[in-house]
Length: 123
Image 1: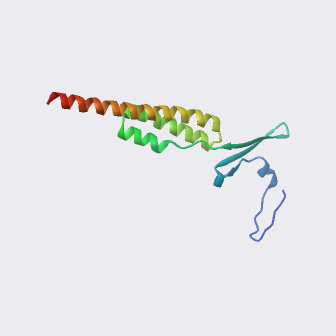
Image 2: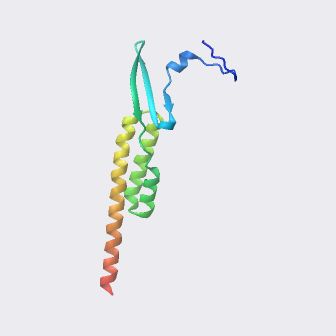
Image 3: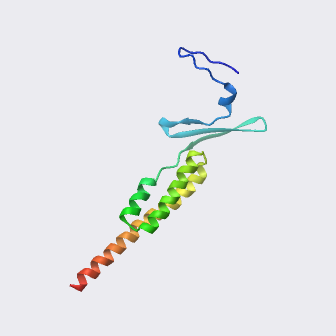
């Protein structure tokens, strides 16, 4: 175990640092390395996928709620995948969530428009 001593006396296990993923949050970039068979593979920088949970909740509450619930499910799954470091899976689930959010908004607009037309034509 190698130790790095600074003014605050922080002890660091260098072997553990080599096997962990490193986050650079100010740039919203993720740098990942993997160890396979004793050699380290550099995967480089990957940008983190977005978080669409707030948009999905708004689509559920304000537009077509069945499609909004589906969007919330996929946004939550994408957030879980992102937290585990599976960025490609998170991007795929975010794409489905965005499609469901857009579908919910369009469906909500069409439903409200149809109700308004029906109400105005019945008077």
